[in-house]
Image (cartoon, rainbow, N blue to C red; front, side, top):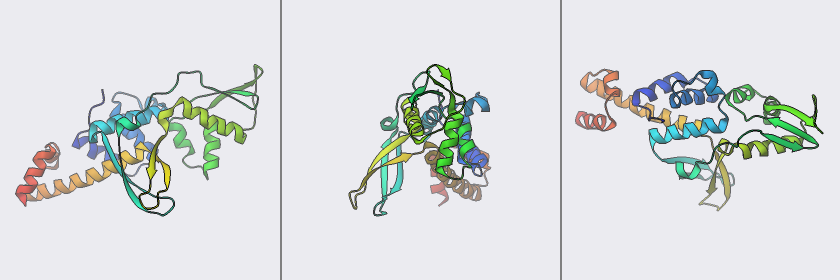
Length: 242
């Protein structure tokens, strides 16, 4: 069972991941959620499986409510949103085989994982990233039962593959229903749990380190001792220190 991250855990993860790419930050958090798993095994989790585990870790660490900000794409109004983990938690991926029939071809594919996200991170544009991702995840193709070695990834195949992958792994994309209070515009906002979790973690750690600084100055305590205190004890001593 996933345990909540301690203050020491959070500071260590932040320190190790602050200069990393977002994909690697996700793996760093995933390692904390899945102790004992090898780096290769962590990278092989589908994006949906990764995100589900990170959502569970985030809930254990920071609670069941998620609060954030967005911006209206029509009038640029900044708005605050709140949702719960229960509202965005979905069922897991479908069982194999994972196949798509499109334009006379039967394609076998696997779900994207962190290694795929890392591979497409440097793509020159979204279209190139989608093409590379499709080529990495398609395992084989056949027509009338005969293997097809070379075929074109047409727009129809790409669109069908994207829809089929979403059906197979619904946890890989979380969409929040948003309505702008200023102009009434409605849209769906994607929630990237890695980005969201890391932003929360970084803000929390910076607040904590400011508390550590204040308590160390006031009492001469070591950082390790202050980190081992509960949040309630730290707040009490901060109030006492003025």
